[in-house]
Image (cartoon, rainbow, N blue to C red; front, side):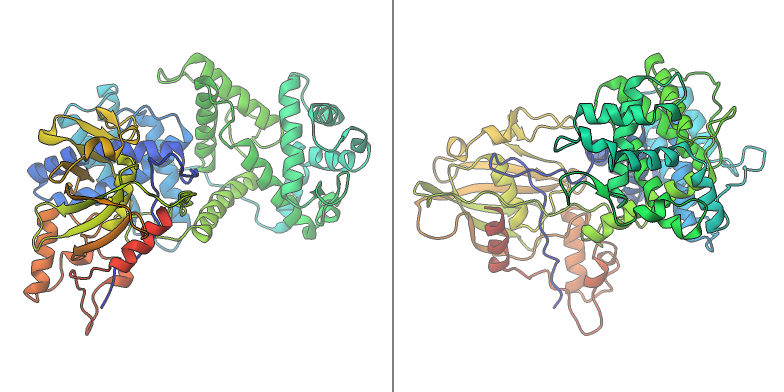
Length: 591
């Protein structure tokens, strides 16, 4: 009998929780924005196209590509973005993914992305949700629905990359940033010892920058030289060329000998690793998080994306109104610095050397592989690009130092509008808050906490929820103790989760008890397995269960079951599965 996959869930709300950044702020912003639109989008899709089941696929595709856009460019909202910039990101994303399988020329990925975006843009237009220039969205719709939107009447420039290892080494040896690496490696392991003082302080970086001053153009300012010197030294250590950990002062790393040689094929790996480290550091989101700096960083990275795709940005071009003058100027300054390092070619466009194109592409692939290797994938997630952006297990709460001695609520959690009934009975300390109760509900019903939620008081007169910019609540749930809301039997509260599927759970106090020596919180009863995440809502789940009862083909279930848990001949999928032990194991991990 197949069981649902048990997994740790990212949580929120408890003051003792140890938080960890597992996804970018930009990606979370896109997800929350689309979650808030999901109910309206689903209803619109049903009325316009007669098929609301397409909604998860469309929003997953839009969400994934819009996240790439948000991570490269400042996103105003999921209903207000720059159409030409988005089109460039769509172009680059598809090119990257198609390069993974060069033998596949079906164009299915492009069709999927363009179809999803056409539907989403129609939705924004028809519901007066588009927050940008009306001409912009019309242009984007026309462009992505043209016969060949990536070919505007002329052949795309051939993407140049080194053909041999010898060519790649020769290209790298000519780059200023590699020459700086050699000079600073020598300096750090000799004269730099005099300025080390147990660490790379300001004086050390200043002297390092002074040692390579002659390799910069005269118009590069002192601050930029210090920034580059710091990045080069860090990249040398990342690539195993410089060792600052073993001895009292920096020493040569294990790969240093190969790096110092010139025009030798065996030196490729050390030089290429260094180049990738430099690019990774230079193109990372800046620590300074003011609007102008982030805008300059995003725009310059966008120009690099175009260069990777063979459509280099002209150096002289008009500024789009969506960019401020300061941000636009800052982006040109960033590109000028990259050009001084040999990472961008001289000329009338911001084109890049073939070896840089290769390194940036490999850097993107390695980031994806590292993410997949370090973080377990969830096959139930809709991921049209074959990428995994799963979340790491969050550390559990700090355990109580002393056993709880206060009052305990016996709560019944009843899922609304599902047949047969699904419910849980739990014991909960009264000193927890509504954010904690949210976590208890998620664990009790084996949900993944991947959608928005909200609590509602009697008659929906007051709402409680977490702080986020895409859903307003009357009261912050983390500030409300259960003891303030639940005082006696029959006290009630409502809970809503995933406003697309619209799961509703009634919370009722059955009894107020004294604490015992048992686990708290804990589940003491219940019935039936909770619905699968993203399975369509109460009515669709009820139909799925009825199919099982009637021994019909599981046509609806196949779309939501993870591949390894799909029904197979001779093995039933039993929605009556319910395990108190498993729920309490997970509650113990959280509390």
